Image 1: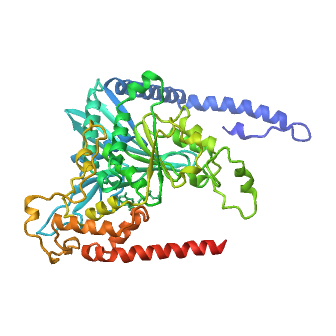
Image 2: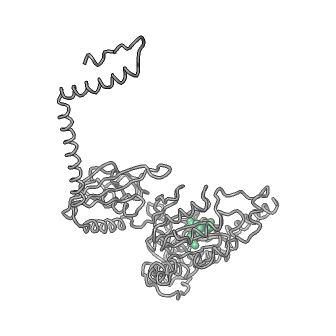
Image 3: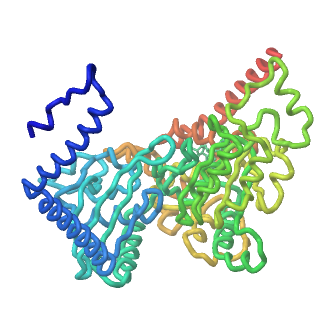
Length: 539
Ligand SMILES: Nc1ncnc2c1ncn2[C@@H]1O[C@H](COP(=O)(O)OP(=O)(O)OP(=O)(O)O)[C@@H](O)[C@H]1O
């Protein structure tokens, strides 16, 4: 050892080259002697053997896993992930590791709603009596399912350009055949549908064009959106017929898509009917907002291609993304946009051809029902409205007397009773609803025998809840009041949203609502007149 550190003199100065090569040779020989002296080669050989064993064990383990275990990955973006999360929430293995909340997960897509417990005669802390359970993340659990051992792990990792956290559920099943996994999936799907109950899932697209679940909306009964007789039925029947015609479309080489253009007056129920139809058909709603900031042709195309098969796509105010009009032939379009004082520019760079391409590009999802809404029907380009893109056009007008009457009914009929409208009877789920042989429902309901007997003339107030404080009205009384109310409402002058707003002010005062209706109509007219004058004066 000592010789290694000794410097070798060379001539008058120091010869670095010679000294370093001589030093390297010395180092090697010293190292060798060192290794021999410590049996280091044997140590290396032993370490190599260990590493070899480790690798062999790892190889055998992976072969064993591949042979005896089935591993499945459920991506957060996929609906099956939600099925599994709801299923897991119900498994006893999770019971010790649950996120429990009274409201923070109410809108979470994988949340499970269970009835809150009643203790000592008192309801749970939440008014609704519902608790929300959700499996905790960062945990691996083992479960026996149908005598099979399986493990579940929630893995979270950053993905995408912006590094969004994305979750994957990993399932390992000790089985040779994937039959047990299929059984599990089917069971989970069933439980999910039961847990989802009466809600519609709403998705919106994020800035990368990926759809993210944002909320649940309660399913809205189709007859709560009051349209002209037969319209709701037509829309539901058409959508049902489409969904069951995949083979028909395939046989004829027609793209399996259907578009609905709902146009007309603001506040007439266009958006409401979309959610309602999604509820009836048990489909999720994907909102594509054409006016969102930064949306351009390629992003829209990417967004549309991310739509799943069989879903409701809501594209509201399709005219809103374009400044002047949605008309390719409008030569004024580009010129006007450059003029000083022109209307504000949209933030996105969406073009009509971009929209058309996105709607029927090869990547566009099959089986989707597209509902586009607009208040400016005439401003739309013919190419956008043509069959194949918008197959069914439905006009939504301002409220008719018929609608006003039905709206009054829906406000004041005792809960649970319906006015026996045709939609009410036919739209409750039979896929084979007959053709549109609609007869206008009676404006005055016939009333059951018991209804027509003693009519309570004076409003009586009882009960404790807000709803019960209203007068207890017989069906016949509601019918009479509804007719009086509709007589006070002018035909096609006010929107259904306006009528609803008015009646909201008289939630528990139907008699006063009827008495005040005429005066309210007059004040609405005056307000409109004033606004028109102000607009004209401002020009
Ligand atoms: N036909 C209708 N029947 C029952 N309620 C209605 C109807 N039309 C509108 N409403 C009520 O008015 C409100 C607004 O309705 P909605 O958003 O569906 O109208 P819209 O036609 O989509 O309006 P806009 O064109 O301004 O977006 C909702 O609360 C809805 O309940």
